Image 1 (cartoon, one colour):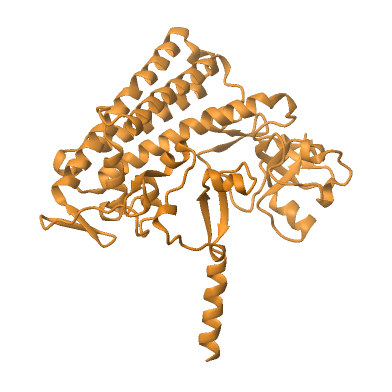
Image 2 (image 1 turned 135 degrees about the vertical axis):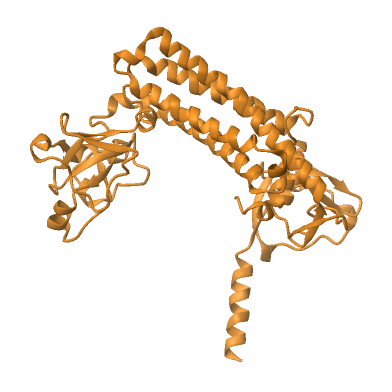
Length: 394
């Protein structure tokens, strides 16, 4: 049967592409004359070890402990909770004991309902406790603002970003502070945990991007929201972001043949004028990635007004200012790209660094100290495994 044969060949082709990450035995690595202790190998090149005396490898202890809890006498390494969660169908991954007492099913398994209830309560209370530790940092920043009276010096943007962060924390606290009956086996616990995680990512991203862009600010000729014009193709556009160097290899791009060391030049994310694109390219374009050497300021922007886009800019992030002839970015975007925040910038950085320090301390305690007073890694893994039953949060 041609179809069956084709399916079989397709399956073989797919199987041949399966790869495994291996921790190599130290002695075998020495025989192979390699200093590597981690290797990526094709499934077709591997066979199972039948001899039970050869199944336990001698590798770096920190590598073994990173992925496995112990070596079982049956002849295999027992995956730790993280590895078991990533590979739930693996036959050596851990499982949850089944129970006939109000069982809740997930992935073919079940757990006691009251255990999940208790876990939800601990995590909700722990998230609320972390949020409560973050609020005083916001209060300190607000007090510094009042003390220095920086709001009267054109620094309203600084306080606007502070207020946005405070709003994020209040949202976390709101989910974690609902009545206990609502916090059991509901999406609320997972929602508060997701919000805390996203806030943690946001804080880290704000500080990292602020630092990177601040270090390269002196190389940047055009500011966010500025209307520019392409020197070669003639279309106008608005700067909505920039990179110190291009995020991809641009050495073979047609428009950069006369630019030396283009891969070392700043590049700008441009939202182009739709009419200019139709005239230049024969159709609309929503985005252009342009080298600084190919851009110049468009001095007539005050006379002609706003640029017409194929899809409008996010009104929550950008607004047109006819007096300056620029699009003004939100305070969060300004901070990320190290735009001038006036006297409040130092306080803003100190505030966000303080938030990151508290978050890092709490989350490190959750990971390494079971008696941290918040919740445990076991609680998190149980919630992750039952996430679909708790409202489908990822």
